[in-house]
Image (cartoon, rainbow, N blue to C red; front, side):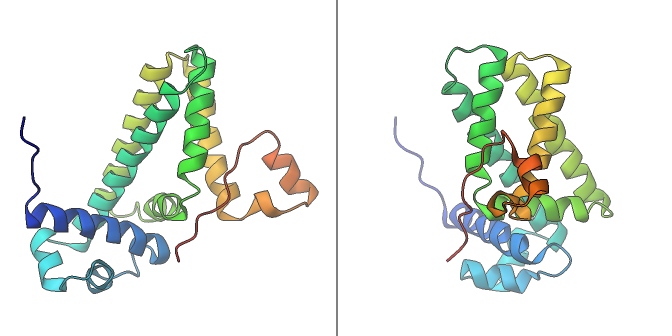
Length: 190
């Protein structure tokens, strides 16, 4: 079977979405412009506007890619689980997610998306993303509802703790909140 070759438009769309993740992660939905994303991608703002009819559409594409990367990481974690039991799968998924959000861009775009849910299109995308992740975790792990809820809740706690560098603090409150939670050092953009 012949390998499919991406068209220039498909390649550029992927580059723009990756640049949108990085750009929106640093500045948020309300601050970042299409021109800034285009500059990061090394293409013209007009071309970005040709690919995405609005900044909201561009942000949604970046957010959807973020959720896709999360599912991919969770699947890698599930595949690496020791015994395939629901607890082992959730534990391995958690480790994979902790590694993934060491990429601060993927963490930050999720936080920025939550802060931009006054926009109904973004709110719908966040709901759909969280629904898809929850359904995936439940189906893949075969865990019961309370275990899936704890998994998702710990994910949100990990966001907060990573965002505020609590893992780097030896204060008692930080030690209380980080106890037993895996953490990967942040991979900050160069």
